[in-house]
Amino acid sequence: MSLGEVSTTFCSTQIYPAEQVSLNDLKKDLKVQVQKLGGNALIFYACGKASYPACELYFECNGEGFSIED
Image 1 (spheres, rainbow, N blue to C red):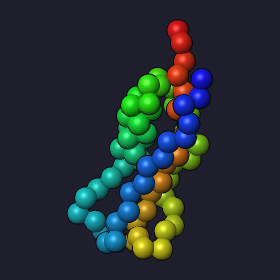
Image 2 (tube, rainbow, N blue to C red):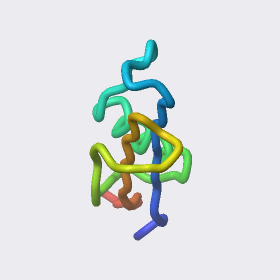
Image 3 (cartoon, helix red, strand yellow):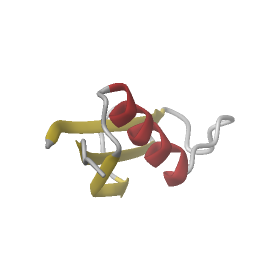
């Protein structure tokens, strides 16, 4: 059963930010969101670097959470 879409972003206004983020960090965040919805499965739609006007460095990940019975 679908629980809906989940998404997460990272924005830095600096070209070389002190805080580093990886795509794995963003994917982990999506997994946590799905767990909070009561789900146990995630399909990634897109995850990667994107363009956003106010950010020098911008990453975005989107997916859909599911609850799948054994």
